[in-house]
Length: 350
Figure 1 (tube, rainbow, N blue to C red):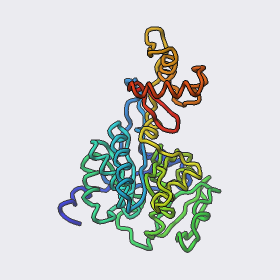
Figure 2 (figure 1 turned 90 degrees about the vertical axis):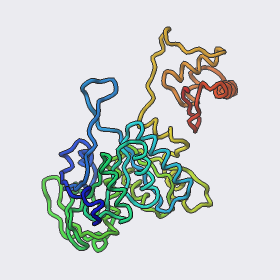
Figure 3 (figure 1 turned 60 degrees about the vertical axis):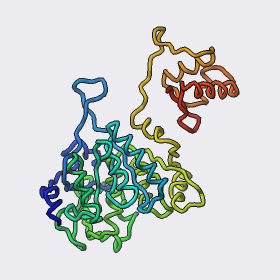
């Protein structure tokens, strides 16, 4: 290891997931890591909005995707990670080439916190050219973690915990492919020994990326991209998945388009995701805070938006105006810079 970066990786820490506020969410995933090894600092709980004492886990977003993205994919990933980090979200990714490294870089540029989850032992930063990026993540208050201990070599065993009946490993991989050696019951869980092999361990780490996150976003991915494995874990864990739709003739859009066909939410703008992480504050409609438009219809729409409604169909129903009049009103309000279109017939106040 280069002496230029060795001091960032000098102190390796280890922790059980349930021992830290940020990682205790991993206790609820199907295959729980037994131990986590990390460099850097665990993200801390933060004060709840409007509270002086109560704290909560920071909002966390995973951004993963193609290792060879287009400029379009890079741009989407950068803008989303930057804005999410600027607002206080922790950005999680895998330190890989392409979308992963763009997401980490954007979070750092925004002065935010980012977490890199490795598919290699903690003391084997991979890919090697990203060791400076890993060092910067640590230096700026972030975290580089792995469930593989320092010094692990290909063929070594490591152990994870699986809920009895979960069937994750045996359903997902064959015994030869995963290196499952033996299983022993322990109350309602079982210990599963696995051989360290890069191919399967990179897939295994994807469940940790998804497990740490509130939302998983895939800006660009081919049909057989490893990031789709992260989406599968997120789906299993009940997390919301966003995918950016793309040109059906481009290979790097096929994975995202397929996810959308299977139920992922299309991301038509970064506010689609940010509004899930940081819901707009609802404003009470009192006589003192009524918002006025230039017409009665505009006033009704603006007041409904101020109350928190965003869906176009609901706005039409509750404002008691026709669809044609609604479209005309929204066009004028956009021109007047009073509202912002979020896409998919959703709106918010400017």
